[in-house]
Length: 462
Image 1 (cartoon, rainbow, N blue to C red):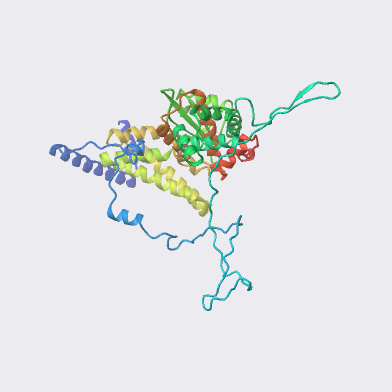
Image 2: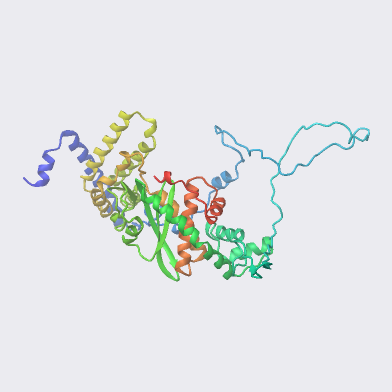
């Protein structure tokens, strides 16, 4: 008796029925594909952001329908069933008294009559933009006793070679990196708003002066990430001096650390994490990411769901559809775990584990699905780890979101002209992304960092 016959003889009635139904579905699928091939109307399915890891920017954009355009012009305000909100009243800096001066009936003078407040309305405005020139003057004095000449030093912020103040340099950093604008556009903004004309060299020098403080804070974030139990990581391309580099991110729910390196190899992971050993690593299945230092790992199910969608679209694969449905249900169970009783959650988790094992023992009928099946078998323990730990996410979306602004920056600016420029950007992005995750105001955080003040709580690294 062959090995295949031995496996079949061990199946019970329900398993045999399920297997026959699956085989019949495969036969029907293959018959449809053969019929289309005979008619010559089989078309090559394009990979998109919905069924693969192709970036959304490369998808063809469909024209918006009339219904969609009408929805965009819907009435403003909160939706039905949702609690509405309004702007909180602030403490005014200026109060304008709107009093009645003359009676509309008889024309009598009412300026001396007692009047009372019946309404208040606030308008938020900003003062007219203008720059301020600060001048520091050094003085020299001769000691009346020893006749020694004494000269005062310039105060901080008036160092030799500095032409622009720290507040202006912070605005340049904020606009150039956080929003992301090229140096040329920053020059136009400063000229249009303030009438202030700065050379590109002056902008670059201001960024260079901030490098030390930004790097120190970014390294402090890195040290906190090294202490985290669960770390997510991803990478995207970057351009430095006309050469393709890689921008890496290492993140937790409250921290993010970026580096830009010429390599996509696992050496970057070793350089960043050093001797740190997280409990769980969250990433895609890139070979370098699989060299992570963690004892366990969770692969991104969002990637797997998209890859399964391609197999469904291209081959009408029942196996891919069932696995995709199982992943969706497992992720839904993860989101609802705090609302379920413990026993019910454990029962559902065990059921999904068993279903996945059964599906991975079935051989799909097409190459794409079979490739995915082999991948899932190889990384079996990393598919549903998030159901066993509530601090592990089922996807690596948080890492991808941390890199999203960098992709925009690359498209807007075309990349970096030097290694130090890439390093400054990575350090500043680490600070800004960490501030976002901790609910801190970005510009105020940048101000505190450049002033040398600690801004991130080291106890919240995980």
